[in-house]
Amino acid sequence: MIKQLAADRIYRGRLAPSPTGYLHLGHARTFWIAQQRAQEFGGTLVLRNEDLDRARCKKEFVEAMIEDLRWFGFDWQEGPDCGGPFGPYNQSERFDLYRGALEKLRSGGFVYPCTCSRQDILNALGAPHEGDDEPIYPGTCRPTANSAFRVPHSAFNWRFRVPDGDSVSFVDGHFGPQQFVAGKDFGDFVVWRHDDVAAYQLAVVADDAAMRVTEVVRGADLLLSTARQLLLYRALGLQPPDFYHCPLTTDEAGVRLAKRHDALSLRALRDGGETPETLRRRFAS
Image (cartoon, rainbow, N blue to C red; front, side, top):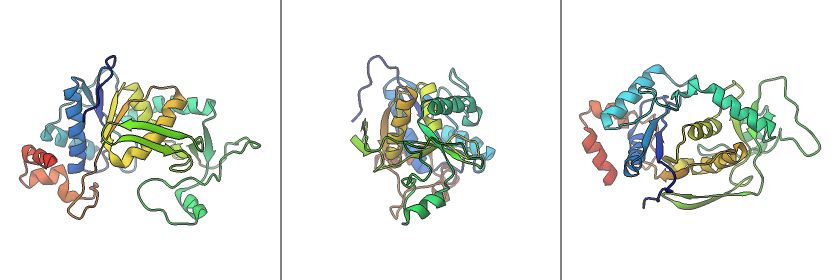
């Protein structure tokens, strides 16, 4: 069921791939829903190149991303290849925006420096962690009421302090009402990495707000990230968009598609003789 758009908001959706590999059929399915919703609302579709990961993002994947999306039938009105009023559309060129958001969080007392690595956190928890989501932070570096934080001399992350016990609720356009509890379902999370790069949660909030995105369409694996991001919107004094999370596409074994599924990449499917029309028919089955 399509959620009605508020009468005073002009629809702006977005495609936000990361060029760390070739796009696969799961990306195409989610992006196709995003494009359909933008078209149904008579809105604008934005392509944003999320190339913050310096180690994994490669120029050839950016070029392949645009080529594969065009081949599949995507048509965006703003993006790194065509410009627009809210550019640049490469995240690697938007660091000033992210630094401004970090400074606002720092001045508001929402973040603190943290020297813990992921392995440190897992060791402190004393239990294995499964899945792609980050483990709940045990509070090792979290300042207490009686101890103001000090900026370490060694490399550190900036971590957002969640309001423990607060309920974060939203109505998803596909899955309906959602509710997560800060400190229970998710903990303090990184917004700025030790290698001086904005983390995903902060960058996507800053970008979606600056690009005036009214609805975020993405996979169901990011439902919990939405709760984190809503806290960032609140801390930064920004209006959040609506959210529409799509069921994940899986392979024949029921495993969620990832970029390691080379055989189901758009590039491999095209080389194997598939057409965009036949692939799109799979979405309806």
